[in-house]
Amino acid sequence: MNLYSEHYVTPKAERFVNKIWCLDNSIGESLIENKLVLPNGCFNLAIVTGNAIEVHTSKNKHEMNKGIYFCSQMTNKVLVNIQSKTKVTIIQLHAWTLSMFPKYDLSNFTDSIIKINPEELPFKIGIDSDIENLLQTINIYFEELSNSHSEKNVIEKICEIIKNQEEEISVSAISKDIKSSQRLLQIKFKTATGLTIKKYIQILKFRKSVDQMVNSDLEKLKLTDVALYNKYFDQSHFIKKFKDVTKTTPKMFDPDSYFLSHKR
Image 1: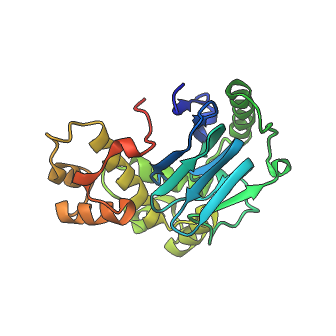
Image 2: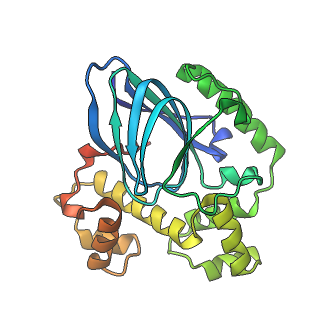
């Protein structure tokens, strides 16, 4: 059994759900320690079964026993310890998904994890549901959400503009594209995601750089090329930003220590 696995929703549900991923130590007899997760611009809904998982964010240490947890946007690497007989199933939500529920104000909610009551969720999932039933529930709910909200709201539009740009885009350019004031966009985006627009752009750029490094031959790939390709000023700027998140340099980065996305 693989410790890390990924599962994908339908194309229509993928508008709101990036994927579902699992950390499965349910038949393991020993603790799995010091595994790392990088920020990726998504929210996570984590379902813990069995014993417990320990998560260290930049703000706090969280002991997550059996239950459902909402994980905010992360801005730095996260350390994970998974106890024996424990499984964590994580529904990865795009940055704009929570903006579909305007009652949530996430302005001051980053690098944090809270336990929630399953009854608070807009869809019903059992804590012990297998992946097939979970996928079915998620697909049905988010396909219906997509059908009932065919028009994209301002948060989804901002994220789409950022993702579709080859060059790094400014908040000023985004505001002109959407025909709204920069201040109003910044307030709306921070309320919906907990991040500034600039920080969200930085996280996406960082993850794109890491994915490029991991999926290339690091011995042949020059850091200067990675830096310039991903719109950093130069190699030293890229190394500084890389160290801000991972606390190590690109040359010392060990992909085997991290749970990284599979290349699809």
